[in-house]
Amino acid sequence: MASDTLTSTARSDAEISGLDALEIAGREKEVSRGTRFWAATWPKLAALAIVIAAWQLVVLSGWKPPYSLPGPLVVGRELVTQAQGPQLWEGLVTTLRRAAVGYVFSVAVGLLLGLAVARSKVLRAAIGSMITALQTMPSIAWFPLAILLFELSEKAIFFVVVLGAAPSIANGVISGVDYVPPLLLRAGRNLGARGLNLYRYVIAPAALPAIIAGLKQGWAFSWRSLMAGELIVVGISQTSLGAQLTYSRELSDAPWLLSTMIVILVLGLVVDAAFGAADKAIRRRWGVLDQAGQ
Amino acid sequence: MTSTTTAPQSATTAVALSGVTKVYGRGSNAVLALDGVSLDVAPGEFVCLVGASGCGKSTLLNLVAGLDRPSGGQIGIAGGANPGLMFQEPALFPWLTVDANVEVPLKLRGLPRAARRERVAELLRTVHLAEFGRKRPHELSGGMRQRVALARTLALDTPVLLMDEPFGALDAMTRDILHDELERIWSERQLSVLFVTHNVREAARLADRIILLSSRPGRIIYSTEVDIPRPRRIDSPEVAAIAAEVTERLRTEVGRHGQ
Image 1 (cartoon, rainbow over the protein chains, first blue to last red):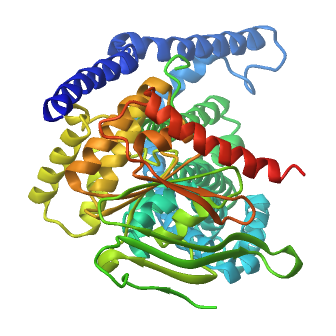
Image 2 (tube, rainbow over the protein chains, first blue to last red):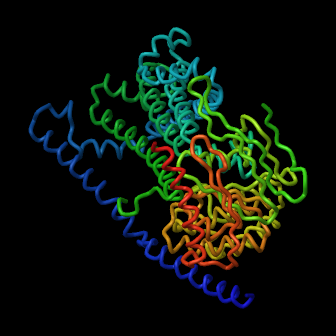
Image 3 (cartoon, helix red, strand yellow):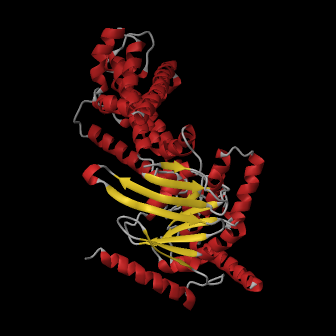
């Protein structure tokens, strides 16, 4: 009987490792970093080249006079000139400082609000749908009120940036908490996670992807609100990127206007790429990233 | 009606259910899921609950696990301990590595880091996954994930293990191997197991005692001791004979609902 058990155990040990090896074989595909980088980069470069070529073609067609629509070469030169002077950098610093302050405050408000609504049935009934309604309100529609309340000041911009971004972030938190799989909650409770520990060990990490999506959307809203605000609330001493857009239009300086727009676009893309990288890292950890579809 | 959770009266029971009733809903919509289920599991005993759909098997395990409250009757667990619960899905946390998954119950119990690491290594050796600690759940096969879930449940250090069709989603070969594994771990650690399945052969392969539940409402209608010596094989004639007998009773019970 004893020897019987022993042989059976030895047999099943070998079977287990054999089966494990067979089942996970071929799951790991190693692709070199360079190959992956190139695969991700060339479509972007190609798209950029097509856009510049199309732009050049429109300019060559003579649809608009060159003083209102300059070609890519002229704008490129202007961009280089701008990059050598202090004005662009000062504007960049002013705008980014406003964006950072407004966004950080929005994140704090959004996370707290989202958590409160997700936890409390009363709060959800009271303001759950109002948060979504706030989200659909175009941020520019807030400015008249903001200017009445805070005059043409940074405070007015800050007010609108927070109103634009916080609801998206709150909504991300709410849907993240709502969609935590009940099975994981049961497993967590059975393992001894109750109350605050359930939030720490199960709900918060399970809701993280939706929270990141909310943060990303919140960023897009706050960036748009900020640009709208800087266009409208000009006349504060600092020449932000938005103010530079307004000035360049008033001076009919099309190359300056377009080069400023390019800077704004690139900034938006860079921040978006950072959120994209965070999202991808999470999906890779969770195993929901389609290896073939990369 | 009373519903209390107390330690069982004698030291010879690991889990004691007496007259457990569960009603879902109210008024005319009320559904009686469990009706007066009384059942004792002895320490070290392996009990399989078998029944057709709607017999309240999973409801019963949730009640014993303390995730839901009975509408009536009493449930007692030896030492008042929180029993470990396993599901048909591994229910691993996808954001954690295998190591970290097994570590969660140890962290929640406040074990120091060094002790945790040692325990995690020991538990993963127990389920033959010592080299896979740094993998994430999605990198493992279904059978391996279920073994990680077993290690994580064992980390609770509870003498009572509740299993809700834990091998239902696995292929036959993997299931056979996991039967051997579970039997070994159960006897090494002298666990009391309450195992729910709709697979009668699986019950005959594993159980010391098979209990058959009726459907709507769930009542115990048949109980049989399985005294085939271990280790058993799922394809042995003795296991097949027991399975045939239980299947016959199960068919009669299912047929009763067709009339």
